[in-house]
Length: 365
View 1 (tube, rainbow, N blue to C red):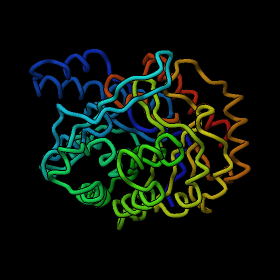
View 2: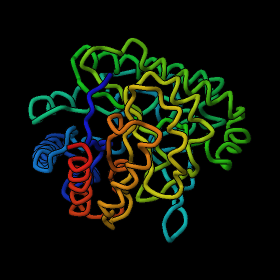
View 3: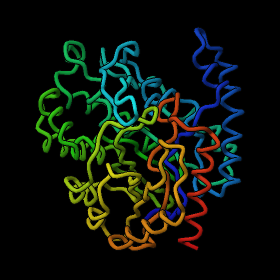
View 4: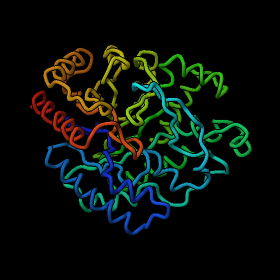
């Protein structure tokens, strides 16, 4: 069983302007870029400590997006190409997302995915660190391009198998190194709660949604196989899309809850519950005893600050299905799943995280 960590956060934090400028340079200077990253990671660690968060991350400030630790360490991606997706959720209605490249050759790991992040973080963190990894199930949906990838991998499952092996190796290395909190991010389970994406799986990917869901669960389970160890918390964050305050899926957890919660070998489920797209708390009745649900009640997409009273009330509602001692609180997603970040300020971000801490202290004092 993992530690309680009542005031949690998903991981990514807004990038400051000078870091964005350095990364966007036509010919980035690696030493200058690393120096800027180091300086800002120290700053965000100090701020997390000041706020009283229970878990510390480097804000994913060394990444272009939440998946780039994988694509930077693995050969086989054409980062100049992409499988475009439509996102929705703001006044404009939609935006095109490109968060990873297209697989063009057989994948080969060139180096560890997170060592460059972990070394600095361990040396400077004031508390428990969390390392995040993208779910293996992300890649077949958005990096498999017909007419390109199928020249190397005959189908999505074949690609998924190679990705699972790489993610599993990284998880096991992190466990062996004593990392106390490892989180798998953004598995494609939100596809299976939204009718339009179930149709996409059937028509565009050529898969039956229920069979694809079973395969996705097997893949995430395989990535975590052998990772259970005393003092290590394993978690998974279920996301409905997070890119420049846009989203791509909607629907409650009801269609997948029983199978998902009873099957995934994690200690914590970080769940999105920040708006009406997320459905009700009723699916939480399927969470097995002893596992923790981290309620993502605070929006990382909108600058408006939630009411503490409303958050407490919603936590009490969730406690009808999961005992209060097995609940925790966080924003529903990261603040910058892509380096451009969501449409709010850094002051808004810290105010949101302060609210998480203050509410958690009030509820679980």
